[in-house]
Each structure stands twice: as C-alpha cells, then as structure tokens.
Image 1 (tube, rainbow over the protein chains, first blue to last red):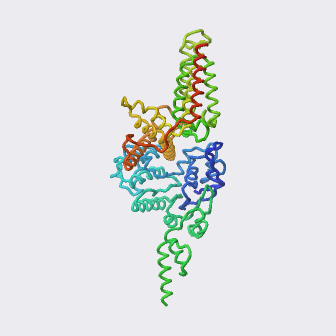
Image 2 (cartoon, chains in turn orange, yellow):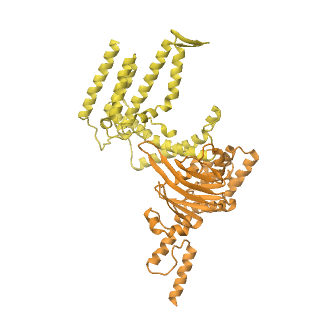
Image 3 (cartoon, rainbow over the protein chains, first blue to last red):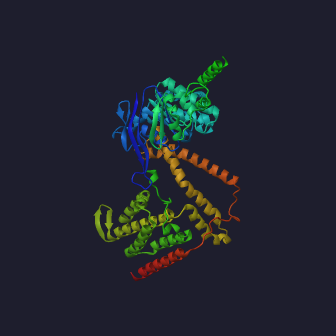
Length: 286
Length: 266
C-alpha cells in the first residue's frame, strides 16, 4: 500500500468573488508502514489536503493514487475509498452521537455493511487498541466521558473500520499535557500494531520530529519541502520564512551552536542532545 | 450544498442601498411585502419586479447569488404551484381522471409563484444589504415606542442579533459534522426516505450538543462582561437619518402611490 499525490490543485468557490486557490500543485508520496507528518501554519491548506485523501473533496486537477486506484477518477466508489482511508477530524469528539460508546464506535463498521459478529469483534478490538477498557466503557454514554476518553472513543470509531491508511488531523489539539502524551502514545501503538501508513497533522514540532519518518511542509497551499525530519528541520531559514518553529530541543542546541559550542547540527531528540553536550563538556575539561 | 443557503446572509458592499439607514430599509421591506399582498394583477407585479430589479442593480449584489438563495424554497414553490393548479375550479383546459387543469387554476398558480419569489427576493435584499448588527439596531429603535406597553425591544433585538450571528457558525459546524460522519461511511444521499431521515441523527445529535455548548460559552462571556439588558445602554453609532434616507422615503411613497393607483384603475 502506498499513496502518491501528484500535482494536486484545489480551488474553493470557483467562479465566485470569494474564489481562493487552496492547494497549488502539491505532490508527495508515502510508503507502506511510514508515519507521515504534515506541518504548516493555520490556513495553509492542510485540512483541505486531508479531505482530498479520502474523497470528501474533489480536486480541480491532479491525481491521488492509493494502492493501485486513482481515487480522483469518476466512478470510484466512495465506500471503497473510505474502507481504505480512515480520517479522524480535528476535535473528533464533537461527532459522537450514540447512546453508548460501543454503539458509537460501531457506526463506521456498520456503514461498511459487516456482519454483527464482525462488528462486535472490531469494536472491542478498536476500543482496546486506543487504550480503553472495553467492559468498563462500552455501555457508558459517550457524553459523560472525560475529554481524553471522548477523543479516544472517537478515534476508535475510525480505527474500527480498519483503514489501511489512518489520517489524524491534530489529534491532540486542546488536550492537557497528560492526555496529549496518552493520545500520542496510542497513535504510535496503533501505527506499530497495524503496520499501515499513518498521516499525522500537528502543530507540535517535537511530536513530529520524534514520531514521523517523513515530514511534508505546506504553506499557502504550496509544498515548501518534504523529507526526513532531519532534512526538513535542517532547512531552518525556509521554515522560519513560513512561520514554523524548530522543535524545542533543536532550538536549544542551535542556540548553543550559535554561541560557539561545538555540537552536531539539527539534533532532534533530547537524549542525543544530552550526549552531545556531555561529550562537549568532557572534551573541554581535558 | 449546505453553503448555498443565502437567506439571512450579508453580502458585503458599499452601495447606496448598503448605506441607507436600517430603519428605512426595514420599513421599505415591510411596505414592499404588504404591497405584494395588495396587488391583484400581473401589472402590479411587473411594477414591483422592476422596482426590485432597480434596487438589486443599485446594490451591486450579483443576481446569481440572489437566485441561489431561492434554491431551498423550490420545493415549497413547486408544492403551492401544483396545489393551486389542480385544486381550483373553472374553465377546464386539460383533464385526466380526477386531475384537471383550469385556466383559473393556472393563473392563480403562476400568480402565487411570482408573489412568493418576489417576497423571498425582496426580504432577502434587506439582509443581503444590511449588516446583521445594524439590522437589529434598526429593529430595536423601531420597536422602542412599544416599550411603554411592555414590549422588550432590546431583548428581542439581542436575540435576533445572536440568532443571525450564529447562522454561519452553525452551518460551518453542520458541514464539519457531515464530513466527519461521511468519513465514517455515513451516506446521506441515497436510500429510502425513512433511511435518509434516520441518517440525519448522526448529524443532528452532535449539532445540538454543539449549539448548547456555544450558547453556554456565549452566556458566560456576556456575563463576564457584566451584560444586563437594555437599561441605560448607550451606543457607539447613534442612528441619524441623512439626506439619502429622505430621498429613499420619497421614492418609497411614490412606489406606494403607483401601486395603489394601479390596483384601483385595473
């Protein structure tokens, strides 16, 4: 399973005075088992891009090839696409509506037309996969759960459809630090267990640097750069120009380098930063 | 599809129509509506239509945008049209079993359809060319004489302001929820009527939850700023009638006179 996005263009309100070029010639690829990070400023076109990936929006031109299907072709069944691509929107807990958490998670699988047993099995699996206790939560109303739990139930609702590609639009927005960590660990766990492509949109550069195999940077609907976290975050000037920051640890080590402390450039994790600084101090002590 | 609803939306502009005092525009709209019900022949509609056309042309709102606003009422239009066409007795033009079309029926059907269309376009011109805030300010001022008999003018105006303010917010919310449920495989477009009605539940429940949440946040924000109703509130922009408003009144009086004379003569 792979995703190829080729020269994607999207225009909102075409022919209206409010016409707006939302995506301008976006191309990138994602391969099996990869975790892809998409970063960009608010209004850069990230959400528009995501909605194309599962057929909610149709592009003006360009192609999106998932596996061996070009989903921009007319006549491709939307049900088929949504079976393959699971999209978790921002603040997904606002889409909860059923009487019980289990029923809500079952909504997606039910729409796929699966059998009763299959649905039950998937619901149980998905709820446990997002780190909740199935027995404890299944009969509770989704509205009486805590914020973090609601979000997990909502994500489980998409995971239960067993998509081959899981897309999450800022899954940790508005959560407290603990819930933030928990949800990310959960995303990592789901990604590892299913071995599928996961696409993660986030404003948190530390998360992106730590989790993703590949980072795509978008600004005003244009692709700025794409590559490994190291490749992307070493283009500091370009990132600054589009209003994006480096991960905190990288900011720290880059400041040290500016002060003339001789350590490696673009360090993306704290352990490595600590090692480098320790090594520098030892060198200096000698 | 949900974004096509233009009734009650404001179309930004800086035409004379936009700049008129909201009170003038409200009164004009009310008179226009009353006239539509006085008129009993096609000539009167022609006059009203031409006047409305001039207003639209002056306002600079694209005609296509206004016509799109008619989409949601097409069903009501078709319904009244068919009902009128078949239900009224008279000279029979065409008959099939118990269904018959009469000249009178056809005339009434067309007549009512024109009246409805003019009514909708006329009243949507008011909201298209008036900022919601000045619209409710206007209503408040027009209602304020009735405060003596206990009409809560300020509260009514406030409620309308809030309702108008949140139409786009709730539309956006609906759009988001629909997309989220579609991403979970929900299908709103196909299936029987009952199936489709049922498929609305996954939209309506979250929408109501959101609406209550928004209302609560708003109430909290208003209380935090010590809002306590209309007593002794002053405003930043006092409404004052200007030259163009008096001209508008004159034109309105002229229009009224023409319609009345027309319906007496014909």
